[in-house]
Length: 398
Image (cartoon, rainbow, N blue to C red):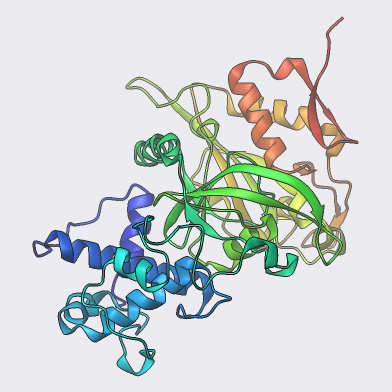
């Protein structure tokens, strides 16, 4: 039987699943700092598929990580402390780089070694020994960099509230699907919660598509200005990446089921894995909106034999728990809202007879979520779906 890793425990915690607490030895403040520093190095390796290294073309954080890692490798007590956490074989001495030893694995000392002294009277923080001036950096080198988030005190309460919402069930943690990234989105990437705080102006990417710089806040107090396409690529590459749902994706018309509330089903949204040419070309904007009084697992089993699922496997991308509401009427309302975007397709069923599905729509997940939110708020009657813009637009009732 496979052993649970630290990442498995972290993911279970994000999902609100209680795991038996492991007995851990009492750690000194110094040991805790060493472990925290080593975990930052591990995250760098996970995100970049390589160990941190030196060089003028490397950013400050990478060179700090490289120096820190070499100092850890040279100290037997550090190696002994970290060996059980080292699932990436980073402590192997054969990887040690040729640098002068530093007595303490202290970030202030590491910054000094990099020419970035914490004593600004001796060394101006704006004049780095091994860093090119911004005027010398070419556009091709202008990639996303991680820096300390100076206003993290604004975002920390958000991360704390999100964690509480996950544990209480108000938010869910679902597998990431390749959908658009928008301002306010929350994800789990490499075991860290991240928040998309800002999206800059769009610009053309080398392949002709559009891209944009983001301001992404990490739950450890760091931020990045990476590109949107880069973030999506990393989320896709990370098999453990997750999307944290909005509060509006919890139980409809109530934040939490109360003692006498009656569960009335689940609205689910899924995406087809069919190899039909039309589906393949528009996979990210074609969704089935369905309802069930069974478990999601039961409803989505054997979809390859069900023509309502296009005789193919599906990916669940969202679900909405229903309490004290007629699930069939709600499903009818959602189908009515998106009627103009109903998928026009005919497929043969298992017996070769033509079948036209009625629960599939050419509409993005974000718009479906927006519709559910407006239903919950009671404002949906003020909106109409515009097939040309693919969005809900407010209209005036005469």
